[in-house]
Image (cartoon, rainbow, N blue to C red; front, side, top):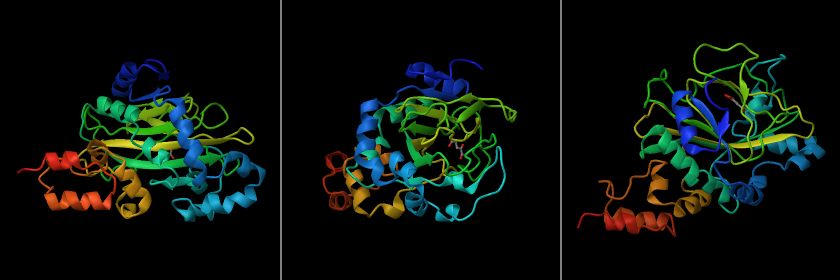
Length: 307
Ligand SMILES: O=C(O)CCC(=O)C(=O)O
């Protein structure tokens, strides 16, 4: 393997992502920012680990029922060892999240967005995947085979430089042995099942990988263990063949409106909103935007209108 598994040096991390395909950026988001958001909001969307493990039968229905796809809770794929099992995909929660809004703000944390822009050498990016994923020891065997993610793109991935998208996990809890650090291999041919490097990292670290990187989820083995992360993935604007999550279905709900009102034009553009100066905007539309997202600073849109 070329280079270290993880680094706190952002310049080095960008080179590793571009040249090797993956990197863990150690502590990309300050621990205090993560802890603040987790303590304020995460336990409104997922059970606290101590509660869950003290009484799994009580918390399981909520854990399953609030998952993005509750069908996953109904049956288990039989089999041992490295295999995809339906229940591995429980515990997904879509943005926007309830609470103070701090968890929503983490989605557009400046350090992650700047890192993605520098990796992809563009300011015109879209966040195309944004969700939380919680795993708890004992829910299922989380061990998967090595794979490349084929479900972010409706056509085959174009893998030359600058066609890349950037997949990423922002760690909301410390991820170390026993709580399922993703096993990362690299690009090339499918590795043998025992290959790879554990993507361990403290909370606030960001595992970034390209679509051609082989990786796999592993089981949580620590009694009472849990792992929480936020998927935040980026694509170039206009790459409509890539997608996963989109905010439109919830964009008239108060949680999204509060988040949108807190955003800069550049942050809203990460979800596809036209920037100030775009021909889309008229004075009436900017006024409607101010009503829809009460509190949004619409001055940049007004100032960019043609007279
Ligand atoms: O949860 C993980 O560590 C990786 C999961 C994964 O790669 C997948 O489900 O496609």
